[in-house]
Length: 192
Image (cartoon, rainbow, N blue to C red; front, side):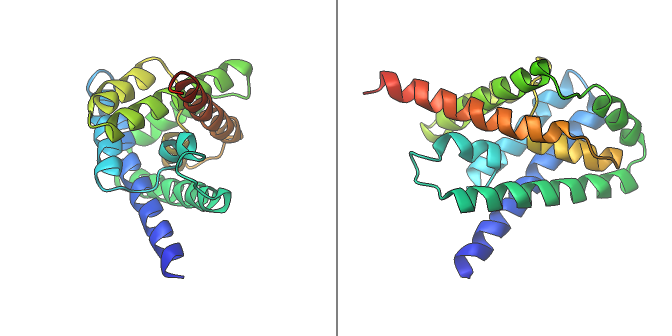
């Protein structure tokens, strides 16, 4: 029971930090927002919190149970959405920005590939952090945002701010997962 509570609490914390980064992105826009967004993932890594997109690529290596990864995902999604709703109440200015952003999302190959590419960047960013360098996060987060790649937890926060739902979130989750695991596979194939 204690282990499950810790898993849930660390997943809530990760959703909160990513939502803060996403808030900055919605509020400040380019070019400052993407740079400030990196604070969220830096905080997640420094505090060893549970972010779905930061765990996917380490599923096999760290022997993460599928059940635990699903709990992390569900908690990240629920609390990300709820925090986004809270932001929509406290700052009406970002609601229109979020609505316009969500209107560009669709269920397409392009959206899926943008999600895969984000998963690749997330794996590299977290791997570099684990090896002692924050530069994967500092450069990787603005990179995926400037390129228009899709991050499922940031997207769920945006959906909360927009007070809506979009089925593209499922495409994004799958793409992030595949991209992260693909990069893990590539990195392990040359490190043998």
